[in-house]
Image: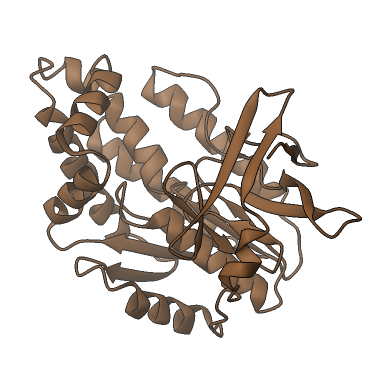
Length: 312
């Protein structure tokens, strides 16, 4: 079994990169499982709020130990994001834990991962402010910053600094970026660091493929006529949720502005959300339903997937 972990600051491209690595392994004939950070019932992340840093670290390590103990002894690949740096470091920073303790905690994780076949892909920026402000602009600028600050200002990191204003969250992200870089410097796992300041993803992906010894296999190309058969509204009555799929600029669009990309002829995926949609054909040759086959926090929380029936 090969575990691939993708890390970086929020908005650095972790989720999209994790999806890319997962798909390329799959298309290279390797059984692959992807855990986005939005995955439902994540095997490592804490499911309840814990306010003591020491207790938090103990639970996280216990979850990690259970996950590692259950890994199959085969040639499959598991791709995860945010389990080594982002989630543990940000949660510990929220609790204003001692910074040396945080680094030691990450080193404890390293020791466990060193016992298995594990690779780390680390996305960073030489100047962390570049990535932070790019992410902020993509997520809504000042409105996003204010909303995020309001969400977390009750946490010790912000309280201990007088809850000054929303710009304190930018300081928080900068401190995380620097701490992650310090932790990466101590990493002895098989690893690849990519400075993605220039945002030149084809070049970065070529580097990743070469590093992982994978052959690039692109998404299938579907014509607008083929894509049109998937356009419509689908509903799950039990959840009270409707999904609307449109065709814009020869691309399938869901959730208003998210592109559905072809995984194969009848299955589509989202880059940065743990969601894959498989369209189900009927006897008449059309597509009367779809099933969300990846477990995520919103669309599907079942092992067997969640079915949405076409309503228009």
